[in-house]
Image (cartoon, rainbow, N blue to C red):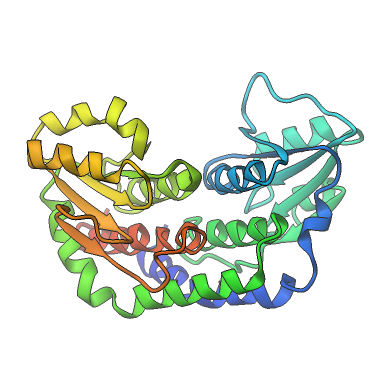
Length: 311
């Protein structure tokens, strides 16, 4: 993994989003979803991208599920099922095994950043997510482009991707204003936990992964409402830091615990009264834009922490 390459990968994200919009915006990628049921499967960031897309499909009354390709009790193949097998490299053993399990029965669509990969070859249809080579060796831009392709497959407009590109660009251009102070707060803690709404939990998980994978600090993900039941206990210890991706109806209850226990809450998105600090960006009042753009904050924070403490 390479720090400078990771940073360049992040800085190229707005262009990558626009490339996906321009390439696929008029194609109608939703046509690849056939049958009564949709199953998305992948590992790591690929599974995280699926988690957000599945919520969107279910809200539109589509029978959709996401599962780790490594599960020992997988959803069985069925002729009325479309399987979206997701792997940026196209070589993940678990995802290849899942695609093979469904081959010949379910309709298998491979989403990959490597068009000539084993996954692309094995699938009934293959879609290039168009992220390009990631110099840093970390799945950041490929995660974003996978989310973008999935959004189009879920019948979201290409204009959404362009607005998300503008949001990412805004965060990148103003990073000197916010990333240093955010890193100062993060450095003073024992780790950075991440919370956000259920419908964007993929972003929450990806944000925590970027902080683990790049600067190698303690970080984990929790859904905001569930945080009140399972992670609030961690705030008893000094040094707890929470990166809160806003938009949940439970944001204010989290801040209530901050007032009681004094831990730092670093807000991404709309202001929440009582938070330690907030990072705003263009379009952060639109949950669909937020789902694509908000991970840029954790990525750039990860770059800064990695630079301060090389590993």
